[in-house]
Image (tube, rainbow, N blue to C red):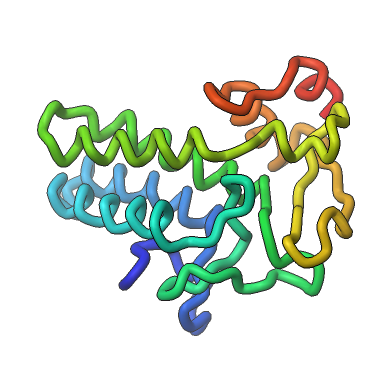
Length: 183
């Protein structure tokens, strides 16, 4: 109720999921189109979400953790070494935000402001920083406590491809084509 983000699963308490919330954002758009909620209700939920993401949720070089506390915005560790940025989950969240930005395209002040906040969130993701010192591949996790300890390159045409598409298309922190091709 505070963040507007998707809970990890039933009985997860205040734990919300960044990637699952990206899919949830897209579900809000579908809900509006199918008449389950009004455009005004969907917009209000999106305003709650982006306000929380911009002002409350912990970020690391613009990337969000896999899990967050939906009230405080603090990281809920996914594992012992996964207590910081999760670039793949961030990709799904950003994908949902891009869909919302395109959907809420009216000229009124509320939709214009929503698009502006979404753009600032998108522009803040430092995709290129996740090359771990300039390598030609992106890395999945970074922790403020253990750095690159997980040392997991993002590779493949599976759930990881969206990360490379998002990173390559960034208007502020894009990656070179060699990183996209190698990953």
